[in-house]
Length: 111
Image (cartoon, rainbow, N blue to C red; front, side):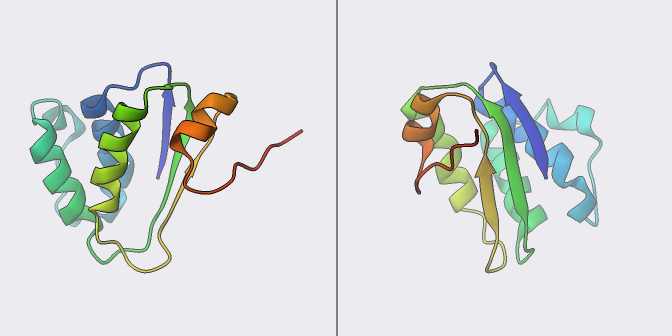
């Protein structure tokens, strides 16, 4: 799944983007316009149901948000998804501050 986050880091909006990207995994996909009517808990539950047991790679691209609280909210939801062993999250950013706020491992700095 590839999600361009950019400047906007509103939890509900990011979850909708993740679900739209994950729709290929879902045997009963919901059209993306319906996700906009869901609250955060419904989005979280649908994400769990979509990815349960699936090995996935989630790329959050071009993240600029430096708010640790917002990142922790999203991280808790993603960690609550019981995907198959080996599932990974990659976050790209041009900000060293974002890398430090979100990092669970050392950032890999590209030249």
